[in-house]
Structure formats: C-alpha cells, structure tokens
Image 1 (cartoon, one colour):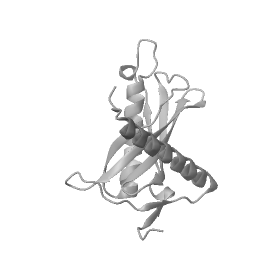
Image 2: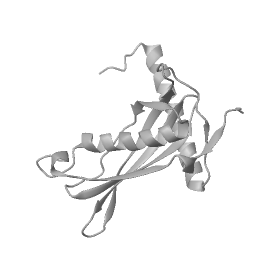
Image 3: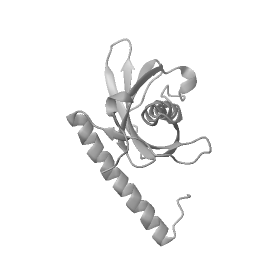
Image 4: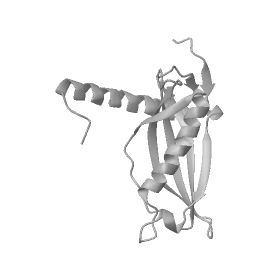
Length: 168
C-alpha cells in the first residue's frame, strides 16, 4: 500500500466540445484524424493536470481506430477521465462522440487511451496521487487500464531485451 494521497475520478473528469468546421476537414467533408487527435490530447491533458495538480506531458497514445467519419458541422464531444495512476504516470481515457446538431443524433466515433507523466519545473517526473474509482464503471476502467499498463510494460521490456528500437 502507498502513503500517497488519493483523488476520486470525478475530481478530474473533463468534457469539451467543438464544432467541426471546413478547415478541420478533408475534401470529403470528413474531419481530419489529426484535428480529432488534437482535441483528444487537449481534453486528456486537462484531466491529467486536474488529477496531478502539476504540469503533465503526453508520453504515449495507444491505438486509435476511427469507427466512422465525423462530418463538417458535427459537434464533437471529448469526455476525458483518469483511469489509472502508476507512480508518475496516468492513463487517461477519452471517449469521442459526434452529434448531428440538426437531428440530435449522437454517435460514438472512437475511444483513445493516453499516458501522461507529471513533471516539475525542471521537466523531471514527479509522483502523482492515486486515483480512487467510485463507481462500478470506473472500477471496470481501472482494471482494464491496469491490464493495458501491464501489457505496455511487457512490450517495452521485450523490446529492450531484443534490442529493438521503437523508431519506425
């Protein structure tokens, strides 16, 4: 057990929305993946900052699958939540939904998992308060995040053993 403080998931949750405009889209009128990823990263950063009460940097973004296109004039909502905390790192999950503002229909377009590291003024990692899941859903996300973290660490260790570079 640790003597670090704990913060409930609800203390750092963040939701933000943005209207997709033509400059955010390709010639088909679908939002650029990079524009959506920028929104995801910002929403996740707010949740990480709120939880750590410290500056945080994005360390990684897990696999991202776009389930369906997001169109010009859709309202995109990113819902961010800290799922799991290690020592200095946090996994933040972001659910992305697109809403047709005329019909009111909402679609879940993708979910992303980002890892953030809390840092001090010198850019060095600092310990973060543990996260306290309050609901069954938060406990499920905590357990799933813990499993993803274990897999990421195993992959990193295997790469180090095999002398593989993470560069493309």
